[in-house]
Image 1 (cartoon, one colour):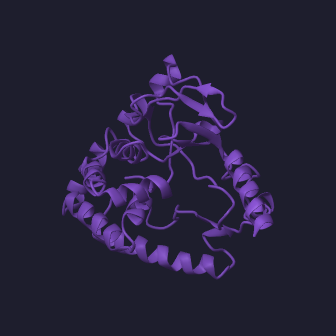
Image 2 (cartoon, one colour; image 1 turned 30 degrees about the vertical axis):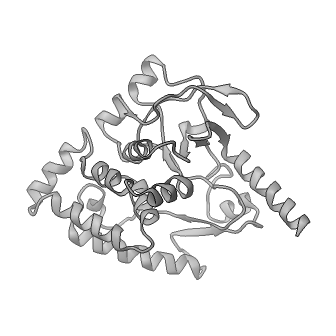
Image 3 (tube, one colour; image 1 turned 180 degrees about the vertical axis):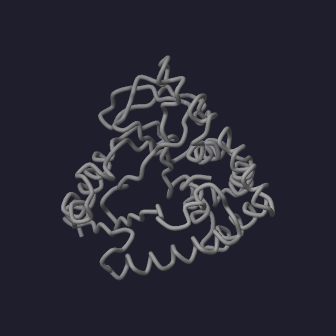
Length: 270
């Protein structure tokens, strides 16, 4: 399903009920026995299940849900499946780390396919890619320069800071225990990971040492916060944000600078 799945479900509903129910239903759909779950996981190394695509499409039939997903979530994907890497044809623009953060979708189906793509760390994703954009032409940089974007994407994107007007919370979701959860989704693993997430959220908000994440406030020096957490200066600052409906492409740093300028203007006129 990809990390984007949890973000989608949390934006689609105001509490965790939808998220938990969706994962529990998905876990049950994978089979009751270890053998069946293992077979399902093996098949998904070629292409992910259609479970999530159907769920996304059903939820986005509601106009309010689509608006929340489109405006408040940016889904990170890559655009270099093996075919493109070997033969080209991805578009004339390539951001740092091949990281595209798509948001402000023109229609629900683009959002559906973008969130499907973020889970396609599969043979299909890496060889063909998932068609997301109906047309990759007609985009412009923040400077006004015209550019063309790829239309197909796959897993491989990375988180980034989305402006500086609000706090940014980074959460590291790689666990050293129960590594089988990476491949097999069960009712037990859903419960275990959800409770772990609650414990981690409380630890991060309390500022505990060794917490599995950190918070960057609008006034913080990004590089200083990253250095304290053992990250490089470029961490969370790679790639581009793509406003699909407005056909605008901005680097992560441009988005942060723009937010800072707006913030300073509002402070000066208040």
